[in-house]
Structures are given as structure tokens and as C-alpha cells.
Length: 325
Ligand code: SF4
Image (cartoon, rainbow, N blue to C red; front, side, top):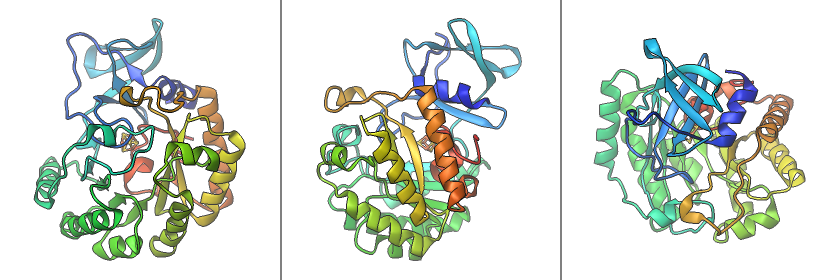
């Protein structure tokens, strides 16, 4: 899939499906786009995730032989196949443990949806079913914060211990807590993600009022010491009104620690309408940022294609250095 075309599709973010066609699989419960139904489109080695919408500039058309095309104003943008997600995304069991959060980051739907908390037994059952398909290549666990980050880390670590039996790489994305990296590493996690969300310090205070950017950065630095380089990730949302200067400096800082930033186009969730600026980045900005990110990763000897779990492995939502470019 051509980089510019994937960027175009990510920038638009949605696709209109034929009337007779509805995506299979459950509604996503992860992160800012929680509560939406997605399709995964693959063309060559490229993959893109699009949210199914009643009206979108992108239209999906079925073609003979199981292929589909994505069209914009009647012109074909890409041709490929739809992939069935295993759990949330293709080939991974990507599970949200606590679908609720005590924090109130202004772009995130999870606190508004205030969903359930999965027991260890439920998670194990879900992964066992995914494993039965023969397609399970990785497990990724993410979690909001039901009561406290410390309790959440203990809950997820306890689940990770039992998930080791599936013998696939395990990635974890949680809010950092005291000794969280040590605890999760000992439990059996292979990779870790602590999300900084916004790298513009002035804006951060407004969009994540209950969280400390400094604490997350400190936790990331410690995590690299425990998990190693190419094993630590951090989501950075693009489109909250952040300055390019702060963004570039933040990306350099994270990569300098050995952390791989995940540059994620903001998803303007209807449940957060009007709370904070949320503008999908243009395709040009996405390509420019992805190229800059690749240069910075190269400068620090980091590799996007070394990831075994999570978003750097999935690639559905982002332009991933060393995979998409
Ligand atoms: S890139 Fe990450 S958030 Fe996006 S679909 Fe894949 S696993 Fe989910």
C-alpha cells in the first residue's frame, strides 16, 4: 500500500460499507475510539483500520474473488482484502481488562463509557478461544484504571502470569505505578506501553488534568532499563492542537531514552465533542511526521519492525517506521 494512500485513509478515518455488508466481530473497547465498529483492510503488506460510518468520503466496494476496493469520489484509492480481527485486531488477542477509568483525559471515551472489568477467567477464556483458531500470534492487554494504578498493575500482572502458557509474546499497556515495570516483567510481559498522550507540556495539563507527564516519562525511562530497547512504547496523540516544536522535541526525547513513540491521529469521539480541540491530521502531516519519526528512530538505533505485540505490530492505525516506510 502506498504510504500517501494509507495516510489519506488514516486521515479520513472512516469508511462507508455496502448496505448488505456489516463488519463481523465485537465493538472495540480500547482507548479513545472505544465503542466503535471497525474494519481492517489489507493491501499487499499494508494494513489500515477504518471505522464503519453511515456516511464517509471513502466507500468500500466488493469485487469478485473476495477482493474489495476503497474508493474516494469514485476513484480507487486501494484494492485488497478485508481481514477478520481475532480479538480487536488481526492475529492478536488484544483485550481491554478494565473498560473504565478514574482519570478524565479529555479525548478519551473510556471514562464516559464506564464499562466492565474482566476477570482473569474471562480473559483466559477469550485468549483460549482465539488460540483455537490457530491464528494467535501475540497477546496485548490494555487497561483503564478502575481504582488505582497500583491495583491495576497487580490485576494485569496476575493475568499475565497465567497467559504465559500460550507461549506467544505478551505486551501490556497500563498507567505506570510504583515498580510497575519490575512487576510486569517478572510476571512474564515482553513489551510495555505507558502512554504520554500529549508531548506539548502546556497542552498536556489541559487534556490530561489528572496525570503527570513527568511521572510517565520517568516510568518510560525506567521501563527501558528493565525491558530493553525496542520493547517500550508510548502513544502520542496528534491533532489536539500541539505545537510541532514541542512534538518534535518530545519525540527526540522519547527515542533518546529508547522508547518508540506511536504517533496516533486523534479520534474525535462523539462522547467528547466540544471538550478539547480534536482535528484529524492531514495526510501530508502524517507522512511528514512518520518520516521524521523514522529518522529519529534510525539515529537512536531503534527498529519499528522489532515489535512483537500491540500497535507497532498491528500497524492498522498508524504509519509505522520500518513497516510502512
Ligand atoms: S494499531 Fe493498535 S489501536 Fe489500532 S487497531 Fe491495531 S492494535 Fe488496535
